[in-house]
Length: 336
Length: 267
Image (cartoon, rainbow over all chains, first blue to last red):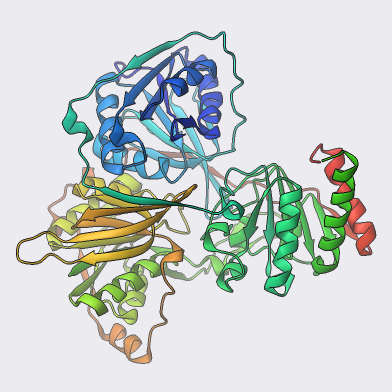
């Protein structure tokens, strides 16, 4: 077990641009690496990612392992899992963490399965156990009603995916130095059974609610689809994204990628505004870790108020248009 | 087409209550159901069968009560169901679960397609699907929101599947040879309700139980013994915040929101 050393993060990039979550992983892992006194490695799989490799070093990596190949341009579970598995077998890191995104949550289980090791999903906290140096992985389950701390005592590497936005990103320091290691694998490593036919980008409104600093969520209390425009308007003014409760998606007022909750997405933005959302336990599961929560609901006993910092008892359809008007005034005063 | 659907038996979250004073979950007397996200996998399998014919097999691992989840699948129209149940399977993490399922699938094979829900509503890991796919050596397509096209295998030519998968940035459209393993998201379909005849048939159906020995497995490779992970502790986070509750006319309420945002630097 002692020949497994160091901690790695698996960076995520989108056409050569690092995603924010990569810096969050570095921020989290840097602290763990310092605690263990081991180097922090970054894994970068992609195509034309030279610039991104340097950025990982500026944000805290000591070494960056780069596998650059056209087959890695977009996520391909065959090739990504093949490369990560191979890299881990060759370099033997003690800990590998990745983001709990659609990519990380596909790639990491595939690799853990083949390496016959433990993997903990969607952790919100990571730490090192003093006596053993083992990775302590804490995650919510059953809609965040239970937290469990998990470890992998006898298998290596110890693997975990980490919930995006559960840690601040590492600061950038362009004076940091580190080593970029280009890794060459034989061509068969890049063979895929998949053929990619296209990519349909989500439209602006629905894009990336997981990444948004502000999420304004539409609930059934809006009463009719037309009122969703106030939610959209508010989100726009706050530079945020539009979320939706399950009934709103089921009635077709907003598309499924907007859905927050147990059967949709888990978000933890800086600010979450629940508009006419009752707060079913399944919904709370998807948003209760937000930094600040404002809830607007007619019913003073609505469950949503239990997790809110500010609860407004009132008709969301009377409040939202006024709030939008007030915000426009305020923003206008600042010449925006 | 022969399709396998992997199913989990979970506590019904619609019935989970939070104890008002302690903020902890009340689990007593919670009925078990089929994982709600697995219904989409069952529905998709039923649609494929309607189009291409064939046989649908549901597979689950759990205590004998987990039969209830399989009976829900049978009531919807699945043909056959198997339950992996043995004391030795208890306490399995995702690796050991996927491993046990993979060995059962090898025994029950061949299959053209394996369908899973995106994740279960209790553990919420979403790991068993991709782990299972990797163990079986199949192409793995996660977060499938639509099966765009499917060509079953014919005359020795392998089948082909074309899917849309939902990612953070948008939909990736891709093609893979069959057999393949898919995890599906809610967007893919609208699960049907079981018919009365379906329920009746399900009640009478025999669910085959498979134990450790039936799968040729050793006790140390399954259940807790076969699990690489260990739970160190479990605790209940406090749900409640210090809520400032405002009951005021709209204009006043708006000012409260504005000042809340301004004080916290959110504007």
